[in-house]
Length: 135
Image (cartoon, rainbow, N blue to C red; front, side, top):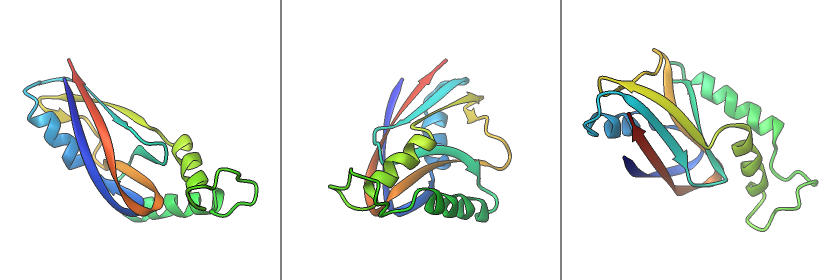
């Protein structure tokens, strides 16, 4: 069973999408199975991260800023701006697909886990996700 989600991001950073994915699972009519989420972009990514304390995501974003800074003179892929190549590297370091089991119509995430769409570009964008639910 395939579902599509469009998520508007206001700009760079992690944006929690757990509730949106959970809604698709809960309304699918499937009791248990596997939910695979794929983002159809190369400058944004997906991750499962702590959602109880926002400082965890702030620290990760800070690490990305230091590890893959914008404007690195070694980058040659710059046609779309100084944040383009760093966004591709950040997406390569994280994930473009996640697989999460579900049971009784509920994602089996841990207590402090959330699903994040990580926007790596400064400007906001509409990101497209494909979800596959199977039993």
